[in-house]
Length: 201
Image (cartoon, rainbow, N blue to C red; front, side, top):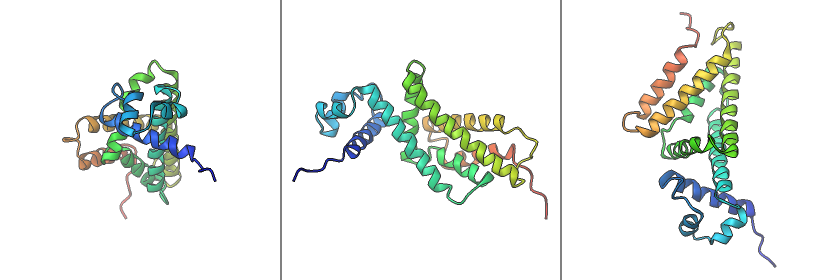
């Protein structure tokens, strides 16, 4: 009986190897030849699933982003409003080796996205999804009375996301200074700017 081959599993295994290489040796040195050498797969095997390096790196970024979103969704289980927004922000920050590697990969391909339609589209897809989530949490917060109903949410969502990305990039580049504690404090400070003050009981 012929062996059943799980092609999706093979594709994901290759992408996982590439993600680790991108985070440790960088995009320039992550060639098809080097991927084959480090993975033990032949070049022909890799090119059977991905026709070139660009297709492979785009799939890798997509895999990284989907893994990030899955982690956030799991952490948000049962949360809404400002509690969900704060948890969302905290889960995005490079406070673990795994998340730091995700940011190393994203940061390398922002420059590529400036000249590559496919990379730009994938980066925009991730940003749009994050922005939509932030607006959803802010709308929940307004309904719960945690945020003033007169506040426009879109500018807040833009500011929150941009500052979160900036914080994550700085923390990736300067992990010794931006400790977990400092990153968490920064998120709390960002939220304090629009959260409605609690009335004294």
